[in-house]
Length: 125
Image (cartoon, rainbow, N blue to C red; front, side, top):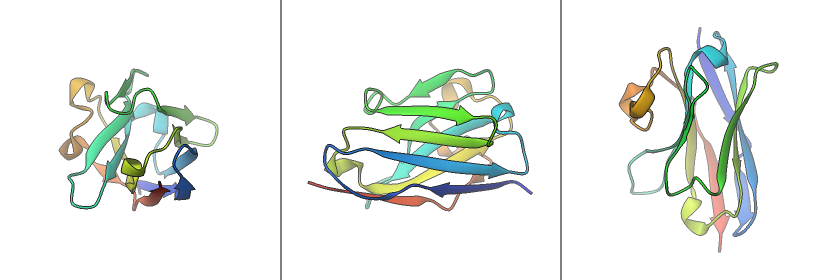
């Protein structure tokens, strides 16, 4: 059974950093396209970053200078390092997995087969 469990969210002041984790079970994380999404209050779920099956990394333009996505193969865990956090980064953050490569479709939530339950990030200004 495929499972994704996020952790690492919390409350932080603007300018601070957080590292989100997504522990995967039931599959080998490096063989899937793995993505991070977030959903802010009143907004649609948006794609932030993804690592595709060939290792290609993509970022949304709005966050590429502040976020880093990476994988720890030994622990089968996906991470999202977030720096210089802003109030507008406040959202529920989700990791997602897809069995096949997504290429340019990585930002589209409907492309992903599996989702975690989310972890809340709150940034105070």
